[in-house]
Image (cartoon, rainbow, N blue to C red; front, top):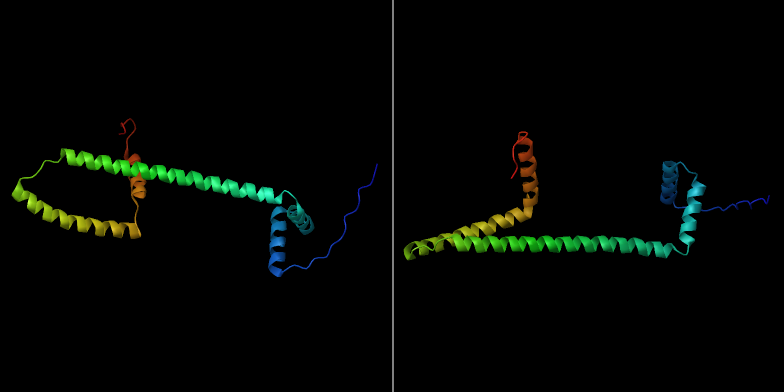
Length: 151
């Protein structure tokens, strides 16, 4: 049986931080520092290292693309929800007689200014609607009795 060639010795000087990280990594994995350093050097010198890095970057870009698509979908749903609500509200709200309409118009301006102020404050420091909804749902489910219909 042929004897495998012996490993060759290499002395390397490492920055103290790099040495500390090497020691910690080897200890966590229960491996020798030499074995960890050899694997790192092999990985660095491997011709497919660039391909692995490209694959990792491609995977991350795909994840970002899916997140962006979800956000676009969610934004579209939110815009459609608002449009349907406004259309429904306008269709079901009766017109006011002229004297009351002028007073309502003035009051609407005040309410709109208060709305914009409240919206700005809420966007600046929260909580967000999605948090409140999940809290309402979680809290509501805790109070339900067995056999109570939901919805």
